[in-house]
Amino acid sequence: MALFEQVSKDIREAMKAHDKVRLETLRNIKKFFLEAKTAPGANDTLEDDAAMKILQKLAKQGEESAEVYQKAGRIELANEELAQVNVIKEYLPQPLTEEEVRAQISDIIAQTGASTMKDMGKVMGLASKQMAGQADGKTISTIVRQLLA
Image: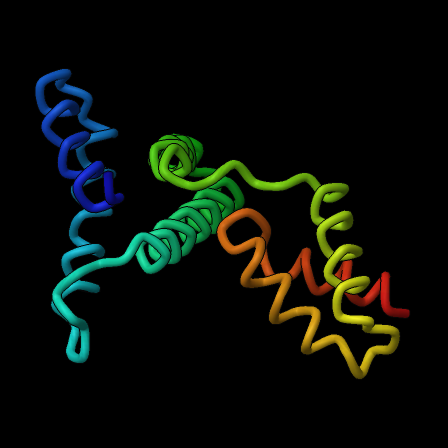
């Protein structure tokens, strides 16, 4: 089942369960999905990879907001944001550990024959595509630099 349909189904379930945090979060996700589907140049369908990018963006924004709220002493708002982030993360693939990322990047380096920092772009492109949704670009970049140095 596509992510868009799954979110729509889960909205109905959250309504029946009277789970306000989950319902609000899922409605927000669906709003962003609909905006992406109806954006100029969009082809009226939302692929799962595009939906995944939207979810990653929303999760990252929520975590950053929670951090700001905590620094400002607004713990109740931070907890609310983190609860929403937890709902969003249910739809994201399980993130890879640093060791798993390192192992996959080592395999990519071996496949491409990369040996210097000049090959970083080639390795980054393949690694980012292969680990999309499972590792952030910053982590991938750091590990690629370490392995090619």
